[in-house]
Length: 356
Ligand code: ASP
Image (cartoon, rainbow, N blue to C red; front, side, top):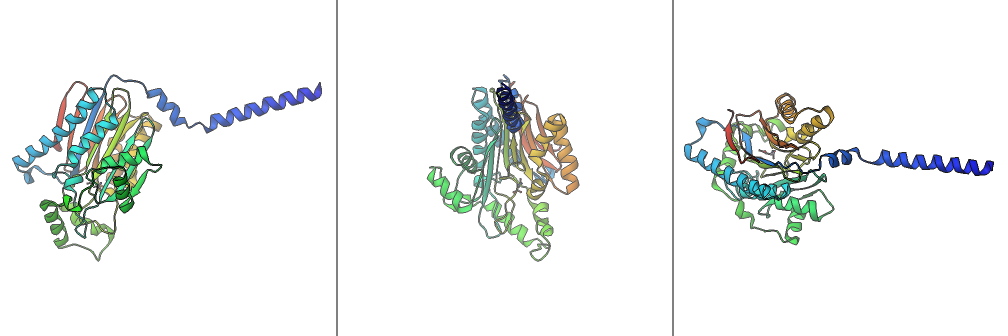
């Protein structure tokens, strides 16, 4: 009898231990995600086309109209997908495709040139319902890098592919491949020459001064999108040519999950644009989500704290667009301007360029 009792209490204790082990190993994030993973019956989308020294005095009315028209065309594509019950991931991809195919923005067709006169493109995408993500860096033959980022997420065991391997994966997956010459635009070539000929071009100086002329003269133009669909799922994506005159296969924040792109159904979806090195050091996109998750603050409070205080104090310039799991939107930047647009479930559209 005594032996049976000892055996029983041992089995009971062992069972408890196993159970608590299971509880301890369950990622808390999954629990909180499930809680919010219910249809919201609302939806929304927000996009950017890059942040930088975008000043009204340097803009012609024709240029301004062209930018606004392309932003509107792109956001309407994503908005229609969401309105018809499509997923936030699909909306992100198709919206970014419009901007990638336009020479106006520094992504896809309009990508900036590297120091060697080539184009190296970066992109990333993240699904807030699973925390799955995909990214590519330094690709040179893929017409729409955001599509490749999605392929990496859905059809590879990896998160980030780079260079030739990423280009090869794109071809294997049947994505549209172009001759690298496709990315040539005269405007971007002129911008490269301007940066190279800048008096303080500092090949020989520090890493920081290397970027000085870029920061002064470049209009940036990275593109990004964050969306909430009717199923309550958030997603974000970013696509870029990087920074004019970049060297040594430099990679910015755009393909870095947590810096350039982040999405979590428990909080928000974010796409960044700006001086990538600072966005990586500040883990800007994730930091906004983390502030919401751990401190319980609103999206706007988190975005303002991270961009206006943390990033600015670090010396970084740029901005973000973001949407939370209730459809609230933030478009926060510390530069003179940021191409941006947003559209909500009531079909209300706003488009902005300068600080207003
Ligand atoms: N963040 C991009 C990069 O550093 C550039 C940009 O957004 O303008 O590559």
